Image (cartoon, rainbow, N blue to C red; front, side, top):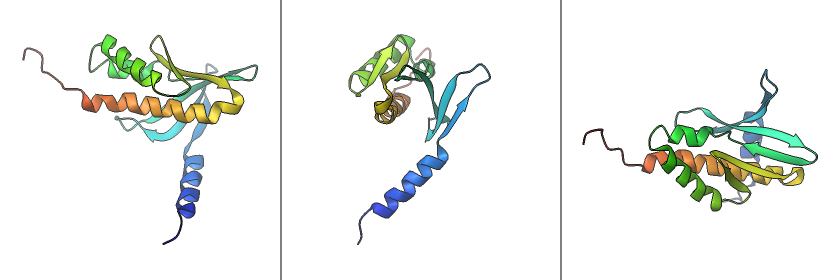
Length: 133
């Protein structure tokens, strides 16, 4: 048995190749990650940079999506719990955000993606009750 270096190298190569930055026609910068949400869509993080600070955000998309399954207030409450337990991540209204110096952007991006994935995954633990039941 060897160490995991080869697997890690291949994972990092894949991660680098499958993560795509972009800019919308209206000028918003984003990063499409290789990680998928429960709809099999790539998780997108919106990026704004100013004076050495980076703001990363889901622009409220994760809370809104979960709010389609449960009440919006409950989705916000779950998001708040996840944000409180995730370094760098805060809930700003219904947006999951991380605002950090550029030097900490990599760690903050990982933490924000983790929080977004956790909130998205919360849908699987929600008991659905049919209307009128």
